[in-house]
Image (cartoon, rainbow, N blue to C red; front, side):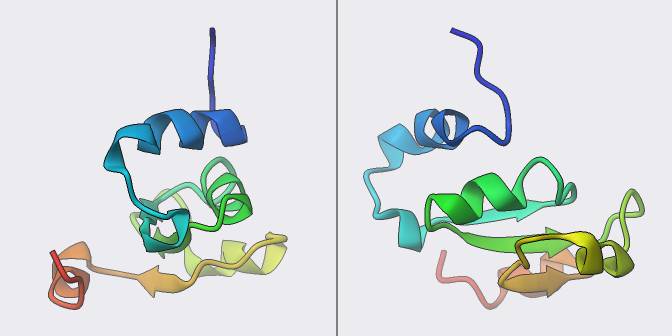
Length: 82
């Protein structure tokens, strides 16, 4: 079987062993075109991180908006309960 983003099967396979409700999963992505929509369809929380590949201006072109917009993953880490 060949799975790829943004198919829902990809995200389901990737999260199968976490044993968490999808609403408790956060997908952090630097590529909004392959990640955010697929994760959103399954009810995941999403975060877009500006890494240089894409900037926040690209978000205006998306059907699905991320729950969080990040510039620095280290600063965001403090807000997570991990």
